[in-house]
Image (cartoon, rainbow, N blue to C red):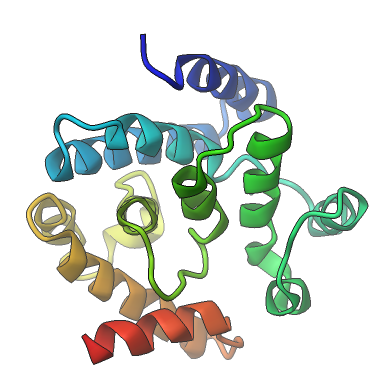
Length: 200
């Protein structure tokens, strides 16, 4: 038995309870499987693949919530959220909410899992390998129709198994430029992540 078997089972049921029959349920499970495969390509013998599965299943637990309800949850539960995420709001709040949920409801204390879930929308400086895995798996998920029209997505989905850092840089660039193209503010975490990969 794996270390996180009970958490995976719980999350599977929670996904069904919240999003059964909806595209979001398919996306969540697809990301979890994709992240698990990427992790296995990075570290075949360690626990990284199991952690990637947990992070993938947890990452969008609050994606389908109305913005007002989500904000009330974050404030009411005193979810640790940086000021920029709270100020920008929108699609950013679901990540800290999900990290908080698995920490407080499932008792998950693994820093790598919590970090990957928390930062999967914004990115951050000094990302862990698991941060990069979930960040890429979420963006490149083949069930996200918006990605199908983007150049090289299929190639990137294959490339990620042999060059995670290279694909992470590309995905980060695309996410930041997409945000800018829509006239939205950049989260400082993403800016710091980009400045760091450029420096490297």
